[in-house]
Structure formats: C-alpha cells, structure tokens
Image 1 (cartoon, helix red, strand yellow):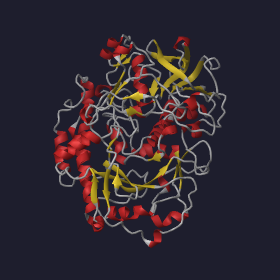
Image 2 (cartoon, helix red, strand yellow):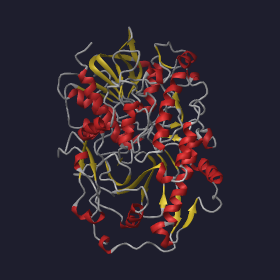
Image 3 (spheres, helix red, strand yellow):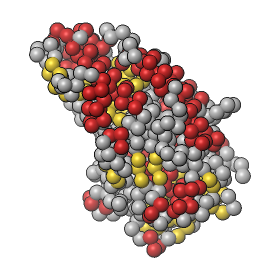
Image 4 (tube, helix red, strand yellow):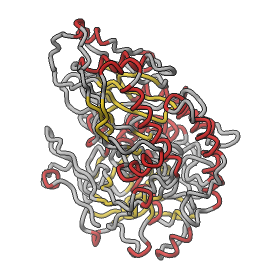
Length: 590
C-alpha cells in the first residue's frame, strides 16, 4: 500500500529548499524531520561549526495551518486479537509524531530508564538511567506552572524536574491547562485511599500514583509546541537545511562506512541522487521506517535480505524485531445511581484561555491492580520459555535479549514503582485502561515479495496478545476498576456496570472479551532498533551507533529496548538531546 498525506498539506508549497538547491555534501545528514530529527538537527547546527541537512518524506505545512498528516498503513492481521487488522498511525509531516499526537505529555517511571541501563549489558557506561535522562528532560522541556486559580484542585508539581528558561522560542513547552473538571474530585479522593496509591509529587517525577500531567502547548499562544516550532521555525541558520517531500531510498555504504544517502523527490523515484555525509548519517525515521531503511540498505536479518534480493552488508538479526506499543481497551464504563456531589470549594469560575484541560491520571503497579494474584502472574511469566511466544524462527540472539527483558519484567511485576496500568479520570465513571508494559513482541519487516521497493510500506505485525500474560493483566485491570467504582469510597453512589456488562464475571469470559475488544496501539511504537548488546539482538550500542557499520547512528523511539510508562514524545526529545551530545562528543574522532 502506497503512502499518502493530507491534500491540504500536499498542496501547501512554500518548501524551503529542493534536492537541486541542497548541497552535495554536509557534515551530518539526518534522515527524518520528526520529533528526534529536528531536535538533533538544531543541536548539531547551533554552534555554526557543522553543516546539517534534515531530510523528511512529509511536507512542510504552511504557517498557521496544522491539519496533521499520517501515513496510510494497515497492520498485518493480529492473530491474538481475532485476526483483526488496524490502522497504523504515524506522522507524515515535518514535525513527525509531535505534529499530530494528542499533546499529552508524560514520562515513564524511574525504573523504566534504569532498565535501559541494565539492558546495556555488563559494564555498560552509556549513562542510560533515570538520573542521566532527567538531565536531558530538563534540557529538552520547559515547564509552564499552573495558574493560581487552579489552586483548589491541588495540582502538585515540582520545578526541580523541569527546565525553566522562560524563552518563547527554541524550546518545547509542557503546559498546565487552565480548565479542570470538578467531577474528577471524587475519583481523586477515592483513589488516594486505595492501598498502594499515592499522590505523585509531580507528573514528571518518575513515580507511580495519582498525577496531573501537562500538554505540549505554547503557553503564550495556545498552539501546539512541537519539534518544528521548537527546533526549526525562526532559526534561519545558513548551516541548517531542511529538505521536505523527499524520500531516502537507502543509506550509501562505502567500505563499511555510511557515506551518505540516496534520495529522490517524493513520487519521482527515477530522479535518484546521492547526498554525502562527511561525519555521520543519523537515522531518525521512526520505529517503522528506521528498520525499513536499514533493511533496504542491506543491514538487518540476513535471511530476510537474501529472500528480498538485497546484498547483505551487515547481518544484524535484531533490526525490525522487539516491536512494542501500548495496548488499550476503548471502554470500561459504569453508570451512577446517584452522582457524586461537587464540593463547594470547587464551584469556581475558571476562564478557558485556550490551553485546554489539565488531566488527572492514574499509573499503578501490578501489586495494586491485582493484590491477590500479582505474584502468581509474575511467577507464571518468569517460568515461560523465552522463545515460547516470540515469532517462529526468531534468531537465538533475540531470544537471549528477550530473556533479559523477561527476567527484569518478572522482577518488576512484584515491585511497587513499575506501572502496569495507566488510565485517565475524565469526571465520568468511564475508563480507557492501557496495558502500559506489554510482554508481547512484534515485528516490522520489509515484504520479501516487494522487490526491495521503498514505496511499499513494511509489514507491521503488532502481535499484540500473542503472550497470554498481557490478556491476564488486562483482565486484572478490569477487575480493579470494578472494585474501585463499586467498592470503597465510591460504593455509596451505587454504580452499575455498562461495559463489559453482565455475563463477563469469570476470568475466562473476560479474557475472551479482552481479545475481542483490545486495540494494539496507542500510537507509541518503539523498539525495532533496540539499544542492547549485539549478542542480545541489539541494533545499536550505548553510543547509538549501529553495530557493524561506521558513521551511522539511530536516534528515535526505535532505540528504546523497552517501552516506557507514558506517552513517548517527551522521552524521544530527551533521547535526541542526549544523542546530540554523544554525536558532538565524537565529532573530532575518525
């Protein structure tokens, strides 16, 4: 299936440059002008010492218009979800996912990032842990505190977790909205009394519990704050070029080194040309297209490349494997017999200043979700053969890497600060529970029947619910929500269940319902070029350089070895900031 973007965007024009206007050679060539690509491009060009080109398949939308465009991709049938297929939504526009997402800005837990360090292997020195990532979160994101009139809602935040340079440009904003529904108050008070649930000191503190979170919005204008507004608009640097509406066909490899890229104008593959990189090619095309470009360049699983007729440059089995996304159930809902009253101190008039609502979320561990069965679930998962639920024929190195993840996840299932449920309180007794740390793994692989045609999208196989542990966790989430709404502080309002509703009382019945209703993606794809040792199926090392080829790094969500307990865009900004420092640190080396 071929790609398309919004007609509004495609007709926009106003492109800053063209292949003909671009230089033949740059110090750095970045593939992908999304969340990571533009951030890295900004940081590498800011000193003026290096020339930088960012190449983006999507269009640069006209100023003042934000229609948002996405690729037109349909997933492979998901056998664990009744062989249903699903739209695969990723940004196809300058700004990438940060230009089209829902603006919800979250971080994972401290353990999420410490696990990345653990998965660096013995003796890892990359600094991939919470303490190091917090430094880059603070560099990447500027906090806009809540306004005084929201004080009755107890919006907790702590500026030590945020950057605050008070500039209107050249930054990404995390902004509290000025509107909060007073209907969330009964949920807030009831959740605080559930054993094991605390109020986080800040949504960005890395702690589980109740937390208010921000939106990626400009506090001065109310408009979207995203990689284009923070890392391209208004910079006007002679050494920083953006080439939109351009396809990267493959990476050019000379004597085991990434020497440049082969490109052509979008829709005109007969006009191929080569743009060279003196220092480094940075691949930031995203979790779906980064493995595709690597595979089309001869870097990936050798058996797949041979079947496709692509000469093998580097046999790297992990490229396109380890695919993860958050899964969710669209609705678990109840109906009040008596609506909870709104306390008098929350009957206040708050002006909607265009920044939207501030949301209250819940992020909790398995021991809170399933206090009587979490240990049993962990033991069941821990005892699985690591290959049991991976794709048939998975390479032994990938199995070894998954075994490391399995060991860690089984441990964290018994821990307190590792989330297995995220849900938002809307003010009504209705929820969208998210399995935030699924243990199933999918693949993103080129189609061997497509004759190495870059215009054909890769096969996106979520393989959601392929491991029954994920179904079991979703069942426990529903049971937790039932207990929360019909028991404890909220029992006085005599709620009745609407969805799933009567007839789904046993775990077996709920499991069937979960498989019939789960959606395999919250649009947070990660993991297909994982930062892990090569002997564990990794694709990049601690320095984000691709194994087996010089001068090629990956900087996007595909490097996450495990998914984080939150929306992914803020974490991608932090990865890009750290990557820019790594790249600049080796700039003088050959």
